[in-house]
Image (cartoon, rainbow, N blue to C red; front, side):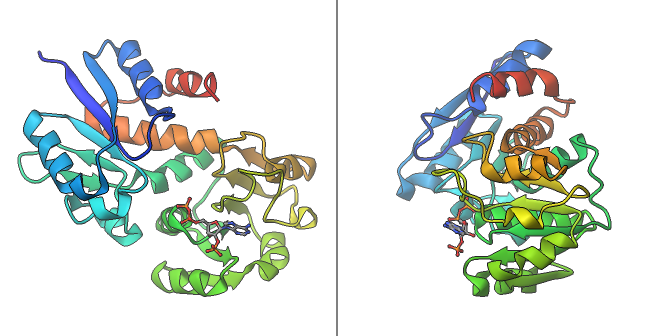
Amino acid sequence: MAMDVYGLLGNPVGHSLSPPMHEAAYDELGLEARYVTFEPDEDDLTDAIGGADALGIAGLNVTIPFKQAALEIVAPEDLATRIGAVNTIDFSGSGPPTGYNTDAVGALRALRDHEVDVEGAHAVVVGAGGAGRAIAFGLADAGATVAIANRTEQKARALADEVPRATGHGLADLEELVGNADVLVNATSVGMEEDATPVPADALHGELAVLDAVYRPLETRLLRDAADAGATTVDGAWMLLYQGVEAFEIWTGRDAPVGVMNEALRSRL
Ligand code: ATR
């Protein structure tokens, strides 16, 4: 059997952790496969995806700046359509390639890995950008009620109009929302560049599970505050891991070797 080729389309993708994470899984399961990165020009996305299909590439991940545009080029799953972004393409069918969004499921699996029950939970998502959209739809699909809080309140309200059982808020509501919540997710970029948090530490409590989508650094101020409050903490590497695990399982139809992929990822963070 010929070698299977998988890859990542993005620009830039030089520092991506996906190649070592996926190749660790291929090694573990003895699969003849490679995972490589591609940086097409923005204008060339349609040609890049069509070319990948023609060359027999088995699957692609898609990242910034191509996630939204990819939606128009592939046959997207319903969840990807609602999120408005595709991050995983599967070329294995006979028809047009199928587009998935594994960011949403990645967040859910990261929480479930930490024994967090999402069904019926009161969840607060901070952020209404690309990550916030995916996570809010994922949580709602899994049966949570979702309060979305964003610096630009109007964006939170607009997103809440699309997500089932969701409400939209400004950051000023966070104290009260978080006080009554079971699950809190940071889907903003706050905590990446500086040691800052979008959530007042006073609002955190011991009944809460906190997922931070930020993974550089792994230990954010939000997660430190959450640990101090006795909350369950889930760092951003878990979400990165499980979006990759989900993509691997879509592509190969096999259970991913999660522990090996986690080790490959964490040893590089
Ligand atoms: P991503 O695709 O990673 O979600 P994005 O779409 O640019 O990136 O969204 C960034 C998110 O972080 C937004 O929710 C943004 O809030 P605004 O919609 O008000 O811009 C949020 N964000 C960025 N910097 C922030 C800050 N200093 N304080 C609060 N929120 C911030």
